[in-house]
Image (cartoon, rainbow over all chains, first blue to last red; front, top):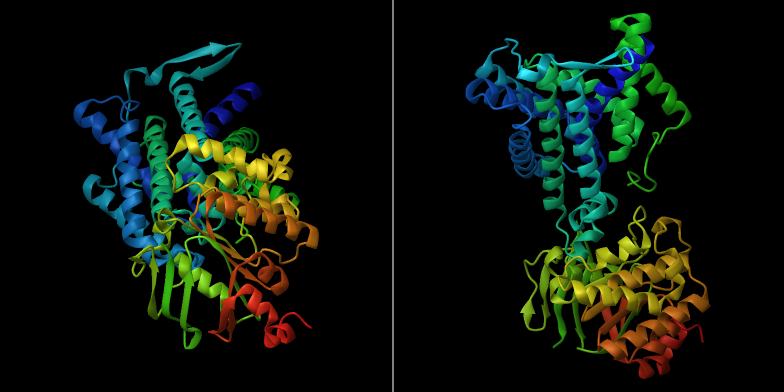
Length: 289
Length: 236
C-alpha cells in the first residue's frame, strides 16, 4: 500500500518537474514571474487533444508539435510584449503576464468551450504489476519522457554555446553585450524554451488528466513550490523537487485525505525554505542582481 | 587603422558626463587615459563599447562610423573590454568565462589554441579552470577578466581600472602581460588607471581627463615630466 503510494507520487512527480522547469528558467534568466506559464500548459494539452480527436494522432507523437508551436508562441510573446513592457520590474511582469494568461485561456474557451475532453490512446488502460504494485503504462511513459526532456534541457543549458550565453545573460545582462550576445534575443529564446517545456508538459498531462481550460491550473502551485524548492533557474533542482512534490502530495493524500495534499506540499515548502532559503539546489551567484 | 573619437558628448539625464571628447587610439601601442574619479573615463569606455549612447559626436573604428551600431555588434569589429570591477560571470567557471569571451568568434580551432595561450599567460588560472569565478581572489578574478577579453582576439582592448584593489605584485604581473600581448599581437590597448605612475610607465601616449573633458595629452614621458601632472597625480 505505502509502496504503491510512493510509486504513484514519484511517477506524477516527473510531470510536476517538467511542468515547472520552464517557469524556473524564465524566472532565473530574466527575473520574470510568468503567470501565463500555466496557460502555455493548457495550450499544449489542447494541441494534443485536437490532433488526437481530429486526425487520430497519438498524443505521444504530438509532443514535438506542441514543443515547436509553444516555442514560437513564447518567443513571439516575449519579443512583442514582455521585452517591451519590462525586464526587471517584478510587479509589472505580474500584471503583463496575468493579462496574457487571461487572453490565452479565453481564446481556448472560445474555441473549445469549457467542456471536459479526454485523450485516450489504445494503451491508456494498460498496466503491469511488480511485487503487488500496480503501475499504469501511460504514467511510466509520461515519467520517462518528462525525465528525458528535463535531461535535454539540462544539457542544452550547460553544454552548448547557446546555453552558456543564456546563463551568462542571467548573471550579467549588461556585460554579455560586449561579447556579442544580444540579451533581448536570449530572453526571447529563454521564453520560447520555457513555453516549449510547458507545452510538452501540457501534452503529457492531457494523457493523464481530463482536458479543460483549467488543466494548466493544476500546476500553478507546483510551478511555484518546485521552482523555489529546487532553486530558481536550476533544471536539475526542478526535476528532484518535482519528484519530492509528487511524493509529498501522494503521501499526504493517502494518509490525511486528498483535500490535504496541496496544504501539506506548501507546509513542507515553507519548512524547507525556513531551513534553506536558497532552495535545495540553488546555484551560487545566480539571482543576486 | 585607428579609432577616432570626435566631439563625443554624453549626458546622463540632464548632467553632462562627456564634453566634446577628441581622442585617437592608434592601431598599435599602449595609450593611457588618466584622471580623477568621476572625470568620465569609464563612461568614455562604455560609450566606445556601445553600452552608452552619445548625445553628440562620433566614433570611427577603422574608417567605419559606429553610430547606430549596437553593443553586441561591436566585438566583431575587434573591440573588447576589461570592465571596471571585473564583472565576471560569477556563477560560471573560469573556463566558461574565458569561453564567453570568444562568443563572437567562429574559428573553433584557433579558439582552442587561444585557451592554451591564456593559460600560458596566467598559469595561476590552470588549477582553477573548473572553479566558479565568484569564488576567486581579486587578483585571480582580474586575470580571468583580462583573459576573457583576450579570448576575443581584440584589435582594440580597453582596460578599465585594472589595478583597483590589487596588490602591487599582481598589478605589475598583469601590466607585464598586457605589454607582452601588445607586442606579440600588435593589439592597441587603452588603459584607464587610477595608478597614474603605472599607467604612464607602460604606455607611449596619454590623455588626461578632468570633469568630463580632455585637458591634456601627449607622449607619456612628457606627461610624466609635466609639473601639473607631477603635483596632481604623482604626488611629487
